[in-house]
Length: 124
Image (tube, rainbow, N blue to C red; front, side, top):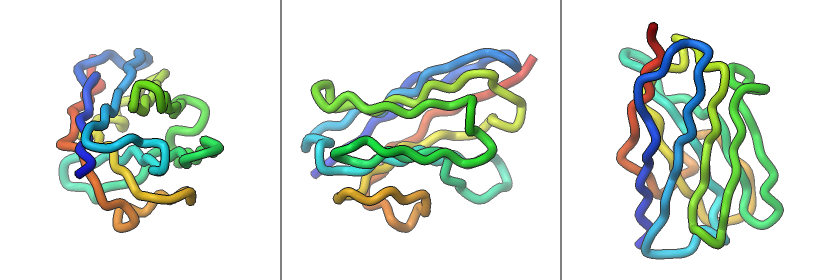
């Protein structure tokens, strides 16, 4: 059974950076696409970025394009989300999720495995 654990969240000032990490156990990530999602208080969960298995194609939501970078290290069984130029509106709980197969997807209902989430707070 694939298990995912996020880390790297915290408090950061506007304009700052954080790197989130999603570590997998129970299975290798080679054949899984990985997505990052976030949920702010009172809002629906939204897809932020995803990366495919195999050729590591990626996708970014317009709200984070140019600021966030997703990458995967299959040897370490991890996926990272580098977040730069953070804004107040990036404040949320961030989740990583996995779905078996090669396709990209940014809808949460496509994903079968979820981490517990890590809090990111952008505040001065």
